[in-house]
Length: 360
Image 1 (spheres, rainbow, N blue to C red):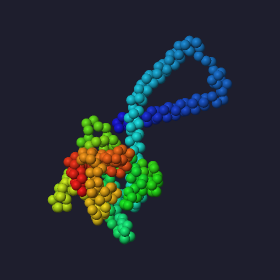
Image 2: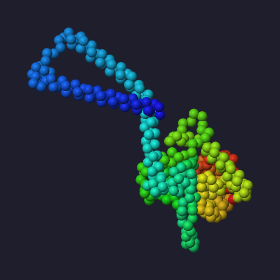
Image 3: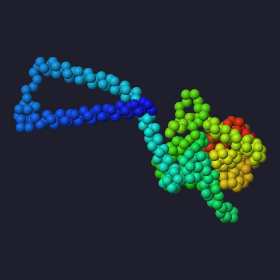
Image 4: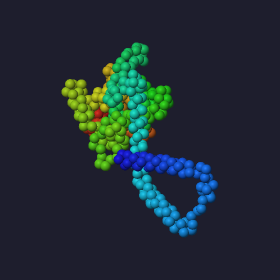
């Protein structure tokens, strides 16, 4: 950033000096031109006596040579300087554009009253900490319609769970049978591709900065002071909140094990849980049979054991999530819809979930 700002300052100063030079040149031209009025024959450039040989080959030639040397020296200095500063200038320009995109995205993310598309209204404000969304659920058998408050998950960790292409897919096509509507034109929503890009950049700007990044690791992106490295884990405070929620669920009798507590973790409106996708009705407070499937597939009746021969394969899958087109388990092919929990939960918590799910 310092190099980028220095380069910008040099550029501005150079432009100012060039502009001043042209102004001075213009003034001198005008002043010199006035002297010729009425005396054009005597003062015309092609009628004045030119320099003699001694002057041409002496002081004038030396001045021209000196000017050439100065220009050469300027080129010798400026070209390497340009080569040194150009990468930082480009990096500064890229970050500047990303910040502008994020700023425009914040306007789209804002509540309806502020002219936005009300992402903030469902997901817990501009920070995306998780909230609720009003929704109506229709019983497919009876046709009964019920008004519910649907847990809208925290999205200040969405890039912990999904990569950018997967988040783009969610924004474009929504989450069927939930309050998350399609927002991209390709999915039938109101936002064009540029607006979707802007929202993606804004979401990056509100991500919780990761702890325990690798030594010397380059940050994946950095906006408004928030950093998210390629590895690492949730901040210590969030990790503590997760552990406290697990302990509380076990102490209250809501869960019989760590795995069950994590599976049904309500922290962040279900952003860290499995039940949000794998238990019908969990998101609006009317859960059916645990793990029997909803947006995510049915985990009961030994289904997970048939998908994964051993716990180690399943643990790896839960850590990394589903990658589009990539095979997993027994004859499974990823769609990108299954999030990765490796950056949010500890190895022990994920192993506990796997043990619990394989017992359903």
